[in-house]
Image 1 (cartoon, rainbow, N blue to C red):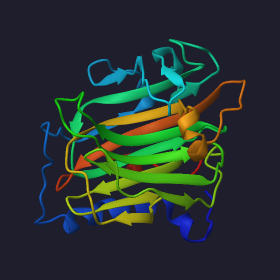
Image 2 (image 1 turned 90 degrees about the horizontal axis):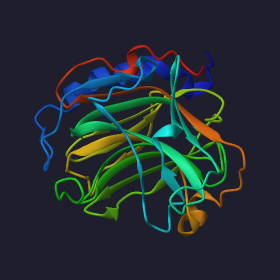
Image 3 (image 1 turned 180 degrees about the vertical axis):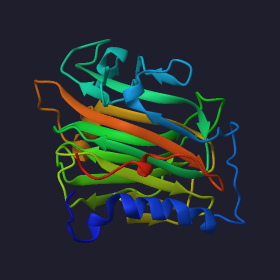
Image 4 (image 1 turned 30 degrees about the horizontal axis):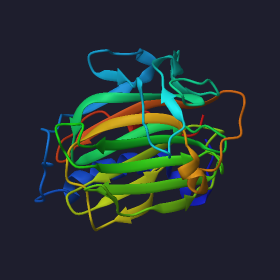
Length: 268
């Protein structure tokens, strides 16, 4: 286990943060608007696909910012987790195929965690986020994002949306190459704040324009289209790339439950 200064806190800091957050949340609104929020969950991807609780995306997003079709075949389970693969394989008129997995249901205020290793490559984005939109029971577009930018494998993009508008795009320079090992990414979502953590270290906090509608929890590896080249770079790879995910969890505000940080021991 590496110990690069403040980042060496890793699992211990993440666990302490999760434990102390229950005290901070006391007395604040505990329920999001829109679809009824679900309860705590933990997904250990080594257990394989669960059709009762998960959905493998099988569609395209017909927008200029996207250049890939989400194909369930690009979600590939392994002994220790799941890989979401992006590859130069045309589908439905798009030049690339990609992988995405959604946790069924909708979830609100609380703590969200993922253990993942990002994919390299200009134009490739590895993501963990909550999302809702009008296609989900007519709710507005609310979203909270972790996005690892494959064009620079030490760059993290953080963002959140409320009512369809981006409310806090921020870039974080990471002290590690996110393609070389697994790391713990987490955010705490409250009615008046969002806090993002990497390996237990607080890297950003937002205190305004906070989304308030329950969202689907999603992991994704995608390839951007021309409208997003300035943001994520122009795709330039010919061989498949993959983001790896070991664990994903959520504990609602004011509750307790198992989390990825319970067993995370640092970069693998």
